[in-house]
Length: 189
Image (cartoon, rainbow, N blue to C red):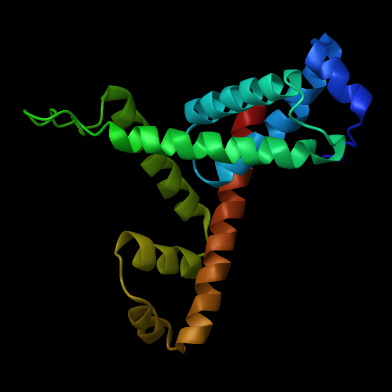
């Protein structure tokens, strides 16, 4: 993303509602706000709500001539975004679950499509493991499927803990490469 230098003419046109300038403003700051809020792990809907409220308040401030120095537009948008984010967080904290009956527990059993995906994933993992070298298959099976500790792998392969990590890294690398090759092949077919 390239930095944009704002000037008085830009702010005047934005306050006047110039569609091209508004489009640029929304794209420029919309992306920055999205990156900022995504890094804070907000949901997409919350990000969109905060972004729209931020734009509304900034445009209202522009129309009231609150911003005197065009070079400070970025800092102003950022501070308004921070305030809106804090208000959003406070509003969520004020509305806990309603008193009385506890909410019904979610059914965490996998649905038919979830079971199908799980089965397909297991079959894909088995197929990839079958293509690996015996040593790498043994390492990954012992570590991830049988959940054996690294100390047990050290004993099996007669290596120290530092070298077993190298062996695990190599096995995982071969697994990823084989999986990626299979997926590319399947996509091309």
